[in-house]
Amino acid sequence: MKVSRRRVLATAAGAVALGRTAAMQSPAPAPAASDPSKAPGRPARTLGQRAAFEKPQRITRGATGSQTPHQDLYGTITPADLHFERHHAGVPEIDPRSYSLLIHGMVERPMMFTLADLKRFPSVSRVCFLECSGNFNRAAPPETTPQQLAGMTSQSEWTGVMLSTLFREVGARPQATWFLAEGHDAALLARSIPVEKAFDDAMIAYAQNGEAIRPEQGYPARLLLPGWEGNSNVKWIRRIELSDRPFMTREETSKYTDPLANDTARIFSFVMDARSLITYPAYPVTLTRGWVEINGIAWSGYGKIQRVDVSTDAGRSWASAKLQEPVLPKAHTRFRHLWKWDGGEAIVLSRAVDETGYVQPPRAELLKTRGPGAANYHLNPVTGWLVRSDGAVVYNQEAWG
Amino acid sequence: MIAIVACAIAAFAAQTPQMPATLGIGRPAMPAEISAWDIDVRPDGVGLPPGRGAVTEGETIYAARCASCHGKTGKEGPNDRLVGREPGDAFPFGRDPQRPKTIGSYWPYATTVFDYIRRAMPPNAPGSLQSGEIYGLVAYLLFLNDLIPADAVMDATSLPKVVMPARDRFVPDPRGGPKSVNPRSRP
Image (cartoon, rainbow over all chains, first blue to last red; front, side, top):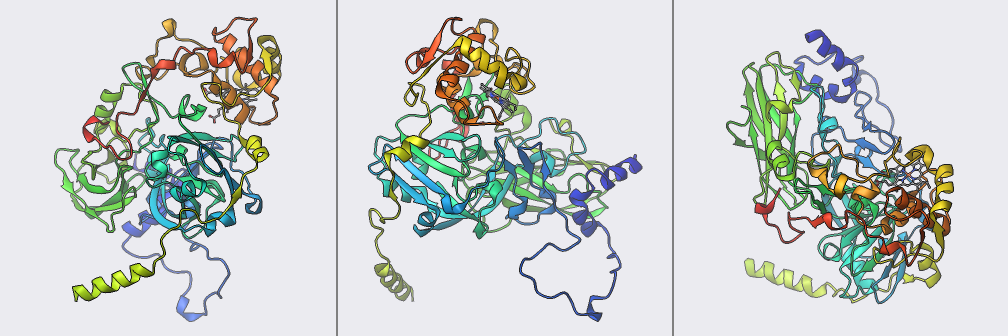
């Protein structure tokens, strides 16, 4: 039993969380190969690299997606090269010199903006999460890491121009209630978005964590709809058309709709509900007895996280975790909770509460409201980890229902 | 002290220019540029191009360019199943996730089939089909789904008139919009 778990740790999931496990478990540091104080270090270089010992990696899901290694991260900003990706026809290579954004339809002045134009507008930066609405592994086996359970959410500081600024520039007509956002990928992916969102907090972003957006995240420019499902944040955006009705594209009818038990389906279910994810302790960590800082991330597309409850007794009692300031709206918020593990079997769970008072629901409640066929979108049930008496931490949703 | 700070803020604010109605950045888009990119098709048919295609024409193109991924009759895969109706045009997808969501069982608008094929199919050569070919493919797929007869021809007039079985199955999200949040109506 113990042997086979070790073997799993060393092979399949080995690369995933070793750094963290080692750092938090082993009391004595491994002997250094040589004493760094006895020889000069390496000279400066033009591009930084991770320490040779650190090898965080995304996991790819076929050709069209990859997941963020939450178990290797400590804060709330996802390094851009570890940001999750999801696309419907691959990552296009776009030359920024020939890039243009067209805004037309129900506007006074249809206009073209080059990338340089977009950068001349007054700019804003904001930190917010992105999450694929399919970010939940419904049939996760015990050997599931946080990355494999919910690796399709990441967070960046985005910089760009408010969409409302551009809508004023083109003279959006008051009758315009929807706009089509279309990407320049091989699927010309397109979504209809309520104009209300444009005048609320939508942006055209061209920078991520202070530098140009990565190709996987929409280089050279993307739509950013804070708190709304990833797919609607159209990447590689080249065209926006204002209209007085939605366009009913394939991505908002055949896909990204949520069938319900009463023989209907929700359409335009944009907002990502409150959710939390314990990133430590989690598979494939093995705990040793004593104090454990349970920690993870919580987020809500409706605003700020107000509270995160943590249970170490399978949900019989809950305690409020500490939230890392600043708590930003529509942003991953780190929570931490100190717990003394006495060596018995334990189930640790987390539950997010957002500023609207919404409480992250248990899985059974979600499925009861939506029906057993609740599609793979917008599933945000309470999750956690089972700590076995030998210290092995595994996923086991049947244990908490 | 508070008064001094308030004065300082007021003085600072006075120097911040008002945002003008427009900033004069960017250039007018030419009609030809707009029409080159404006490919969307709405359920009312706005955006459909000239041209026409018959079921039989679509059948030939489908066999050559689509069947390898979607199956001989649109049901066999390996990729998305495109053909099939639910008995009595029921909509059991929330109760049974195994039911196949196809054009005939799940898509609310026939125009979306045209819009999507024009955008994205076939994935190995997107954008390579002519309007007439797309009308033919749409006609063939609607025919395979028992939605139009074998001798039907699809064009900008006939396509928006095809009523899909799932048209009235889609309901607004009750969880509330960006501003009107009612936690009690969720999840």
